[in-house]
Figure (spheres, rainbow, N blue to C red):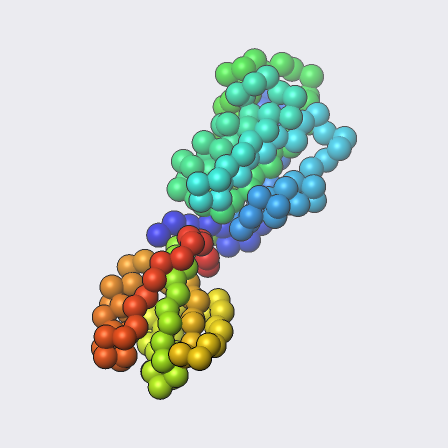
Length: 200
């Protein structure tokens, strides 16, 4: 089980008269991450560098700093803290003293790492999407089984045979639910995999 931030956080770091301000927030999609960037970046600052990690998806930007000195170190700070579903923006106001490539890497990664290290966190529950087809007579009992297993209902439709239920469930709960559904339906219902989804 991975963790994300409980709420948006901010941390300031001064390095040789340059101010590095890290602002980070929990995000669930790339669009949400880029919306956070739009909300917190300072157009008057020297650079607004950023990175996000959302499951297997990630992106980063050096925003004009030398390649590899800002965005990637921010991403490394997110990964180093074991976080997922996080966008971090580090805004720099230049103080007149050049830091060199190594100094920039240390400053950007340091601001991001310290911001994330001290932030309150919450668990991210990974769920996968599943579906099942059951007869009307078993529907009530199967609804109850899904609820007890911690499933999040995603959809329901009916046909002449019964109901098709779509739901998201932590994968570790699948075997027990599968056995329970089989028992309830006397072997007539199977849980089938659908697409993957990360949920909270």
